[in-house]
Length: 486
Image (tube, rainbow, N blue to C red; front, side):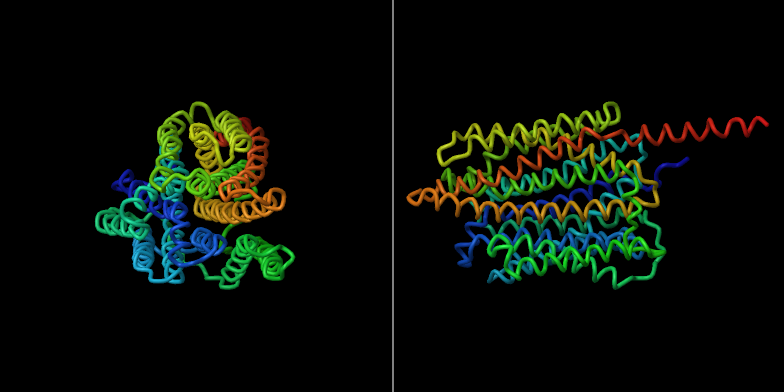
């Protein structure tokens, strides 16, 4: 049976989509290294500034669920043009921004483009490559998902130190233009255009649900949970999400087919991805602030100090992808989360205002050595268990939760960072500013370390989806044999 769709240039299609998604995901964290500069330029607090990251992720979390519906209404080329076009407009708006509001608006428009490109990339890659070649290809997809947000602070540190933070967006805009000119003619349609009825109630519930939930988490950085400004949108968001799920289950043509979560390895793989993205986005917003404000490094040096960890990710991703089909997901996931846990324990026990920088570099390298082995194997194994007709729904569900994880990780990290600083100031009133900031970062790593423990426990239950499908097919053949002989 044919396991994939034939297209003229599968490698070129995959490359264009991966580059577009890479630039968009790079944009998630690119401003983390520039947050202090943005705060100075626009005279805003850290809690307000973090909305540049949280708002980006919030937009993705709202838009990505709609992607499964979009892929049934529009061709692959139309979606790629729309995604790259919106991303370009957002990048130009942010580059020209005379105020924080315009900068935030540009970020949101750019996120809308990424919200289209990301699920399209994942769905298309699954459709145009046979299952026996997916390990290596999904290794590259995993590299995009992990390396792009991790490289954000490193590359932006170089740009900020030499040209200024506005040029982060000018470079992004240039890449979007190149991809539109070269890439869009190479796009063949691989989605089945059925144009199902648009359920605006589902879209509204999804928007209110994810929006309210993430807004509440982000607002906790500035206001306590007892404030109606926090708990009200949180409660409304949870209720809306419950209603959204109930509606999807009871509809004949749901916006997202939640039946994907009936597949055990898909559910477990999605959870492992969720936890991994939480760790990536939490550390990617904390470490640049720590290196710059607590240890006193410039943006350029701070970015370069994170480069070895990103290099490990780049080197390991193709290796893990090529070995995935032979070794399977469980071994990678278990070893990966052990490494992630070790790295976070190092952060937890060494972070201070006078930590030797080699310890931070070593811990970051170990962290991404582990994360490379948790993300791609978990994602590939999860999606491999789904039948072809559920790829778009599975991609939308997984990417939505990934963006929720990113937004939650960023918001919770800033909230705990602020709480840790306040607690330390109460205990040590005469502490210096670097000591206070280091204490806030260290306090947050208790949470990240706990996430690592949960991830390690989950990895113990992973089974190989391909092996499960093969065993199921063999059992069907054995059952059918006696019938055929009669």
